[in-house]
Image: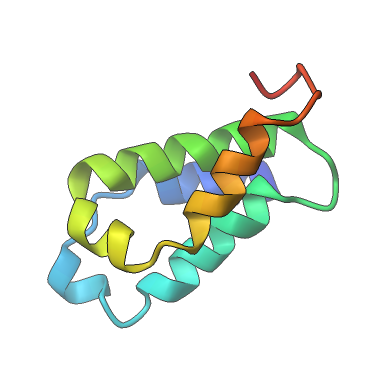
Length: 84
């Protein structure tokens, strides 16, 4: 279910003005997907793809809600090769 939820988030076209109030919840959900307790590399990858898509469409808002940056950066230093 997590993979589907993250994929659905990544496929949405958000209007920045309309989602500004709930955007922290969207980022929180994506951070959960990145650090999912199931150790699912698919969920992590889909979450990172969603972050990438949102960064491309709403860079200002993504930078304002920067809690995802540390989570994504930590993946760069992990030894787990499944996420690469």
